[in-house]
Length: 75
Picture 1: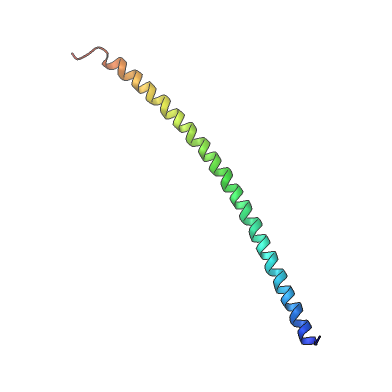
Picture 2 (picture 1 turned 30 degrees about the vertical axis):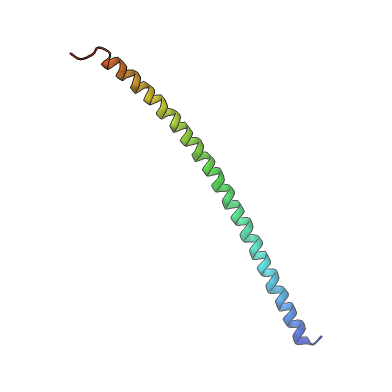
């Protein structure tokens, strides 16, 4: 093998190795970000369910108050 071919092969291997490492690093970072977003999304889902429960309770209280207010009929 000629020395120029050997240098080209080494350069190709180095570039390929660096590209693979970059892809692996990017994949790992993306996976980390996706997991963090998944956790945040789950937390927000729990928060929404809590708010829905609170709103339902407030609606029941308003209905009860309206029934008391208007149970006497018109004056």
